[in-house]
Length: 280
Image (cartoon, rainbow, N blue to C red; front, side):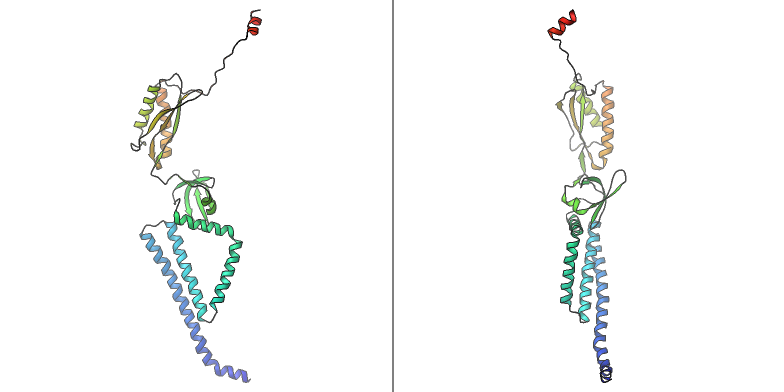
């Protein structure tokens, strides 16, 4: 009873002391959460204004919110009397344990950060990486989503993307289209070159600069091979490829220049024994 009476007597003092701490802790939490939202919106607005890649905007703004919110939690707990030094140590130990258990995910996260920072490819680029090829649809923290030409969605881990070679076909404004055109050994080489030149110069996709290349490259087993290398816009690569190849075939047919099939000439030589037997 004496202890109970003592607690009742100290109740006003305890309420004032700890009540104020709890009130201040709530105020700190509310203000901190509000500041976290402001940090996210402000960072997103500034980067969007400077036309930063949307992937970078989303990643950085979320990181800014997370950092401010964690700081708010630590400050709130410190206000109500929790030993934050011990709490930080516990969080660090837990983070280490989780990190060891999730090494693969952390590797993907680190690779995602590198992709956001150095941007070897962007949304909309056609790339070849990790043994797959497609248009980059989305770059997230842990994975990259690619859309193939036949409309299949492929999700590749960021670590697989960054650990290998990334071939970005959309990085440059222009691309060179390479053809190897084989004609018969009986064909007039000068006339063949004129026909190929006429096709390239009259094609709607071929650029004037850089200049195209048409040259004799190889005397093969059954054909004389020309290389035809015009330059086109990156976005026009496949339409140009199909159209130029069709026009070359039609132009060579019109000029009666043959495109030989793969063939092998066999020469039979008679031996004296075989000849005498045939005569008998």
